[in-house]
Amino acid sequence: MRAKRSTYPITRRFIVTATLPGTAPQTAANHGKIYVADRICTVVGFSESHEVVSTDVGAGVILERLQGVEVSGAGDAMTVETLYTAVANTPLFPALVGGAALTLAIGDRLNLIDNIAGVTALVGVCVTVELEEA
Image (tube, rainbow, N blue to C red; front, side, top):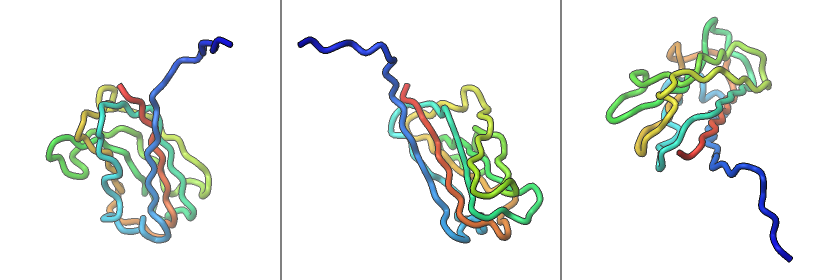
């Protein structure tokens, strides 16, 4: 018996997840680097969910790319802001931005930024980043 060739394209996608359990997301220092690229890849998707909403108007998270010696907040934004004040226990899918900034070179890092440096009442944050090998 001969094997059939698949007509589906072969993709080399993988997932990176990060969780800030309990009240950990209320401290800005608990946000930070979630992945160091070990291969050239491109961010193709991002989602965020939280268990309890923040009471701080405008509180949210941004995914950014850090290169070289860049520190948190000095990198290239990869997503629009996802608001922590949005409905709880519902996955949010912010738009990807940045064009070429979505590509990671070996050694680049993915970083989460808490946009207001500490939020109140926020509980249980989970993010998922979908990447595709170049």
